[in-house]
Image (cartoon, rainbow, N blue to C red; front, side):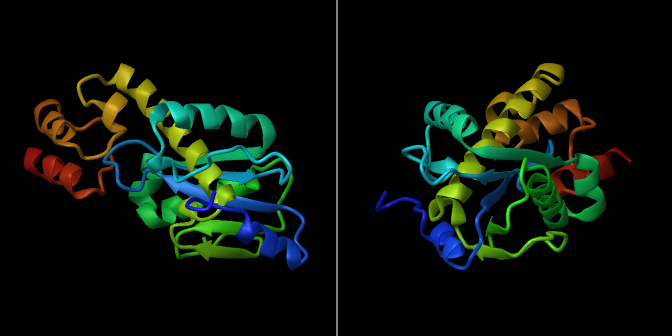
Length: 207
């Protein structure tokens, strides 16, 4: 694992007296549609799946395989913030809300959280450390990134069946060229984020 994430940050927290450490990551800040999804994962130090990595660096097949392995050996909680919450709060606060919900939903409350990024969510009730590019540095965060991505991709695939034409089954709601063209041609769905400029501009044009 020399060139990928490792267990250093978790071991440092153990050395400080924390017995349960959760990695936390979110996915879906950039899309024009769908929820923002976060996962919190407590890995068993004796059963860490091989090949954990930033979910963006893994093939879809490898991600799916690791998703099943993580689910089998770790404590996992996945949570969301809705499109309505994203529009009401802003995407950063909604991302943090999803993270807070993911931590709160774990079977056992961890003593410490490792958070991907550079900001600790304001509503987090336990001590935490932020790690820039944490999904490529901490195995717990990398596991959380995989769980969140797979779960959100499945949500967007399901939504794509109900709202065909936007390509959500392949673009996951991100602003691909075809997705933006579909927005122009088919209009805005209830699952689009109205506070995001491309969506807002189309609604404004309609008025």
